[in-house]
Length: 271
Image: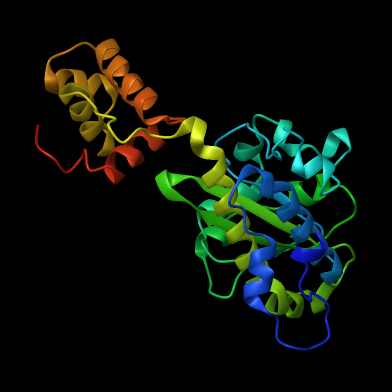
């Protein structure tokens, strides 16, 4: 760890961004644990805890090269009630991952709601009362860092303050929001890159004409039944083609199948 550590104290000087980013850079699976420890230490010095979620659509916990949970073993979320990554419905009922779908820059949250550098009416509509009612450890404010990744993957990450700050918290957000944002994006992008090998889309992955056709209609909101009527097949056949396309593209749901197909050019080509 000694060779990874840069100056992270609050001495008032400008941070060495290259050195800080290097601390949380992940190039191989063996770098994951060290990068997580570095982020944890940086946040601790600033008075924050760390909670990371690489993909809100997946139930896979973030782990190091040996399979040990980062959130439990390094970031200290050890109580059973704190292990949100074991909750299959977390992304559906928690306001944090929902908010990360609507924002791309770091923002902050307290009991009154979500707040960012620029007004966002979508965040204003989210009720956070139930979140803070269930919050463990007594934290009342947190900085949130969304990371939007290739193929529609959304990463939701938060930095709960270890003590209450009240009206002083906006100043902390202004001071540390960009720092946490840069470090989190670097760590998450590296983590996803080295962890994606098992879900990698082969360069020779090809959708059939019918699979691409079904996805094109699905992309504009047509139901399976409507698509079946348009292309003269039964609804179950449409479901089969879209499901097969999802398997080829290693998608977790219909929306991601459409997104990946779009990114790979299938919705813009003629077959």
